[in-house]
Length: 436
Image (cartoon, rainbow, N blue to C red; front, top):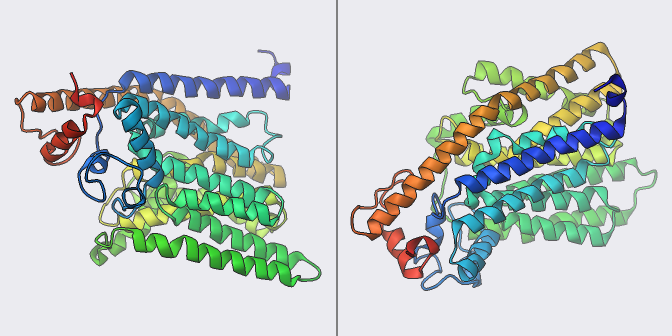
């Protein structure tokens, strides 16, 4: 390609979209290749004859709103129930649904930032990390669609609450999506969005020459309604047996820092001597925009900061409730990998704002690092897909042996502990993998 190509905004953007779509399609094909009709992980818990499910799956409120650990997975339970009646809960079809819901996460994120990045010709490339090795577990583990839904609905709440007109109608729509986000997994992401919304409204009110009582009343009413409709009822509904162990409280901050580091750089390390400098580095553009009060003037930037605050709120929640773990599994905060494109956008805009040698070098350093990591993990992704396929196939064979009376159903690769109760329940329900 000649030099004129790289100066043509449309050509560069089109090529960038082609590369991104290639990653999307390739991952979809790979996900379908490794998919096996066997449920695994926490999905087994949905089908046992407890927690409001005494016979066949149903859409009753008592079943849908029964907590799973500390979460309410209402929408996912509804999807699974419908899939039971449509195709006996065939996991391959559920995986397809899961993948397209994952696409909604990307599309809703793009909806928020598209105006802010319209001058970046290669902008689509910034979203390639969402279809990289780090998201493979999300693609292939349908149970995680609950988290994907939580984030996607949260993004739509940000769109209507931050980017659309400041009207009662848009506030109401924002609330609807906050509720949908909360009943998808947890209310922590929605809480982060509401906290951002409060800050945004305070900025708006303080910038007005004449403070209107209506704006103050509307903000206070919004906060009160949020507290009444989301944190209070959802706290009461969650499983009271899932508490915190104070003996592990000292791991919360390290886990939070390590989770933020990997979520913004894709560099995984349990070494705080490495992760703390990374944490400080990726905070550079955030601090720069706050110090220079740019975030107080631009609603697109306010929406991006809402994404950051909501993600950090949820990372903190994971660090709190997983405090007993020295290293939190990627799947528990994989949604926060959305901070990779967000951080890249901020580094680019930081250079656009200052246009100095140091901001230019910071931008190039970050973008180059992310590019090399993505390229370097492509073969790792291939290996990971192979591992997932092998795990699922072994699990399926183990389950089939149980139904033939040849095994005690200790299928450790599918679920820790004995599966006999779950497998008997699956046979009773006639799930697709139990049939010849």
